[in-house]
Amino acid sequence: MKKKAQAFTWLYTLFVIFAMALVYIVLDQPYQKISDVFQGNFTGTAYEPTYNKIQTIWTMWLLIFLIGVLIWGVLTALRRQYDSPY
Image 1 (cartoon, rainbow, N blue to C red):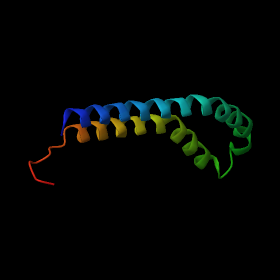
Image 2 (cartoon, helix red, strand yellow):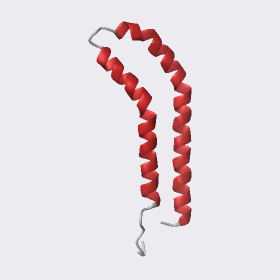
Image 3 (cartoon, rainbow, N blue to C red):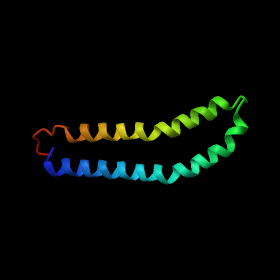
C-alpha cells in the first residue's frame, strides 16, 4: 500500500475514534439521567436482566468499537498490494 493511502487510513481511523468519543460524551449524561429515573421500575421484575444487559452494552460499546477500528486500521495499513497493471 502506498504511503499516502496509509496516512489516509490512519487519519480516517483517528477521525472515527474522535467522532465516536464525541457521541459518547454527548449522550452519556442524558443516558445516565434516564437510567437513574427508570432503574427503580425494573428492579425485582422479569425485565431486570434485560435492563442490566443494556447498561453493560452502554458502558462497553465504545471500547469494543475502538478496538475494532484500531484492528481495521492496522490491517488496512498493512495490506499488501501486489504489483499489477490494475
